Image (cartoon, rainbow, N blue to C red; front, top):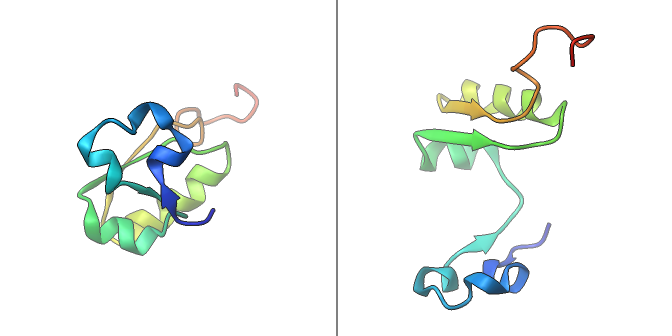
Length: 77
């Protein structure tokens, strides 16, 4: 994903003053861990577990909204 303004992807936010400074970019675990105390993940199944591992290794607290850590059994999922 190229670095681009949020307002280009979500025009409904264009009128908000902070939207001009917000940008969409490919997430980097090391950078997120340095910039945030808590990182919320809402990633596809299987992707969240790997990304969470990287964040946890960097010392970030992670709240995962995917099914990766919610269910212990793949059969139940």
